[in-house]
Amino acid sequence: MAPRDSIVNGKANGSLKFSFWNIRGFQSKLIGKKFICKDFSNQIQDHDIIGLAETHTHTAVVDELAIPGYELVKYINCERNLKSHTAPGGLALFCKENVYKHITPMKSENRDIIWIKIKKDLTGLDREIFLGTLYFSPSGKKESVQKKYQALAEDISKFQPKGYIVLQGDFNAHTNNCQDYIEIDENSEELDGELSPNSQPRNSEDKSKVDIRGEELIELCKSFNLKILNGRTSGDIFGKITSFHWNGKAVVDYFIASNELHPSFTSMRVGNYNPFLSDHCPLSCEIKANSKIVECTQDNLRERPIQFHFKETDKAKLIETLKSDEFSCKLNPSHWNSENVAGKLVTEITDTLIDATKAARIKLKIVLKNCNAPWFDTECQTLKNSIKRKCRKLKNLVDNHTLNLEIFSDNKKLKKMVKTKREDYKKGILEDMEVSKKDQKLFWKLLDKLQDNSNDVVKNNISAQKWETHFQSILQSKTPAMKFPSDSQEVGPLDYDIDLEEMLKASYVLKCNKATGYDSLSNEMIKCLLGLNPTILLKLFNCILKENPVIDKWRISILNTIYKSGNKADASNYRGISIMSCLGKFFNSILNLRLTKFVLENKILNDTQLGFRKGNRTTDAHILLHS
Image (spheres, rainbow, N blue to C red):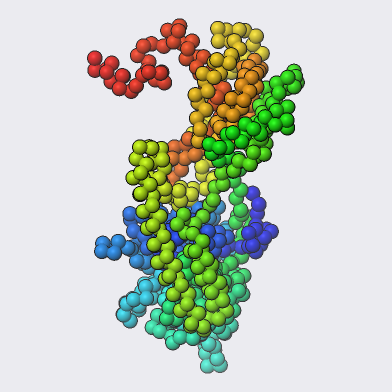
């Protein structure tokens, strides 16, 4: 584990990084689930605490609130509109796993804000930090706005005596560059103990008129000696625009902190505007922290090995490559000597098959993370890139209203384009399913395409450390392992060499289009070798049977997880499927057939023991019970 004393992922030494973003819904018709979108993860992946507003979540979709690598600390859902099936508003607060134990959610009856307490041992400060993440709707009359700020003031009054206050959120307040402090002059000497010294003036690119929400926010800051970080902190000294709309722009998202805490903030930035994710920009700020606690975690896991994608024509290509002089000499059993112990032979055959597969130019299976939807073609991508370029240009030309309108017009055009292409894509799949009813395998493959369950955001949210801890607790047996003699020379009725007929009979396990294990050998590769020169595998298996070695790669399995029931964010609600070496399974199937034949011929198994026996079904047990 690498501490953050040095710069890690672009972060300053010993810092705690906050982020706030009004995301305007956790998913959209254009890009789907935003939490697994590459653009979204690039904006927030470096932050320790993330506050999101307008999540548009309700009880039915609360499981979708999941960001890979982060814990959901607290959320506030909204009532679902039965007509539009939407839930406007909503808040969610996330933090990194190594920060989670240093955070305590605080109780509040205010439905517009989430409060948490950040402990002193995380920041190294003399007091706790009470962080409030909020969203104030732009709708409502003057009385409603005043009521919201009154409720916020009551919460601040409750927490301020216990620690510092930090607020992050979408206040929907236009404050221009109004002073957020009471200016001290010669006439206020008697109140000098109650007032803060004159602060640095605040800048703002938003020149719109101060509204009622802005007035209430400024009064709140003056009343509780709070300071707005926008427009006066390193990284945002000009008070950049935080929200873009078709008819204008504004600064409505703020970071606000206790005046005494302001020197501890090292930077505050407004992120890039991305209309595909939200019409608001993400905000971030950094504060000095205890670098011994805030540290990066490393997953103690192996990388997934390479896999090859075999087509029908690829088998002939691989066989021709194996026949070449370069590989045929490597797979010649006459070259094997007494020094080639079983473990070395397995490695030699495995490496030769993989090298031959590469030489035959058989394509690798590539797992694309956060890739575009299949209907999002080059035309869509070109228009998307054009919009991104205009957004970057708008960042430096905030007063260019024509450019702003162009962005919204192009974004609308892109949404229509994606909708049309999505409908055409699904229509094509349905037509193919109608044609392929007789081919069950193809039918179900097309159905999976139609459902598109590949991007499971909740499952992806479970970190590698949690998976590792969960499966270690299951697989580590508490019972002592059985000890077998390693030097026994005793020969039993099952100890005889494997013959060619026995090996070919067990080759039924070598089915095509199956997953490969940690050694990267597929059934297609083994079948090619078996058809070309079965003597090689026969000698290898007999060598293993005689020497009884430990083949390291055969002992490693790749765990795939399947959801069972319950909370999707809990690793214990998933079942593990172990994908082992195809070559190892082939060898084990030979032994399994031999053992099965022995117990049946010697009548070791009772006739009522039907499990895993050829020609028996589950229904047979029911017949026996009822008869």
